[in-house]
Length: 299
Picture 1 (tube, rainbow, N blue to C red):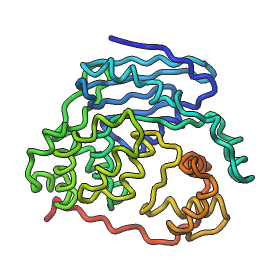
Picture 2: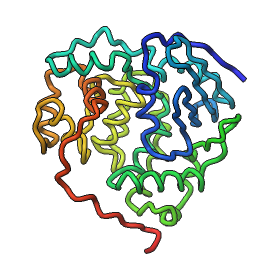
Picture 3: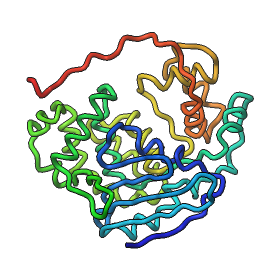
């Protein structure tokens, strides 16, 4: 069982790793106080990773199981935000300065797990968070495998497992044809960009954006999570612009254009400011009805 210990002085690991575990009851990841577990695929094979730490302690213990253990441990500093250059961040206004003062331990994760992140995001496209959670769980448990080691997590389905399924095989999971086709095509093409995860996102994202259904929302999240890009922007989201407008400008009803306008002064640290905004815990009054949920399995 390979393991490393890392110095995480001043870093809020729960905040760093929170975006990786944002889908509830995700069978590939578990985040609890003082512990983070994730099962994923790597170029060297499957891996289950466990990170443990104690509040007030400046050390984190990282253990890994499976053929991809070496790959994952080599990149553990990126996952935990240790390679994130916060010295480059200079808040541009009083609101950003106050948000940064409240959360000085926030760092940006960089997962490097392109296929896992891409599949996870495609399932979340244009459905409610509740449906996304259920459908991702069904997909993993139907086409994935139990992870190595003691974490009791599941590996995401491999690209080969997804690509060989016909679109209608995804219907029983609640995933309609459009997202099923996106998953299948992405599974067939992701290998062309997988070797670029250790470089800048600009080298890979145009290739991914050329795939059907991989638009700015998906590539924005990939830039932020897979590559840890501090200037990533996420457009096309139902809730994010409203939160940005509410926290940065005190107004409700902001759209993507207004969000980008408010974030522009913070370039090239727009995603960092976005993370601070989303972590502020302040939300505008609800103005829209909840999206209607449709269960494709009944059709």
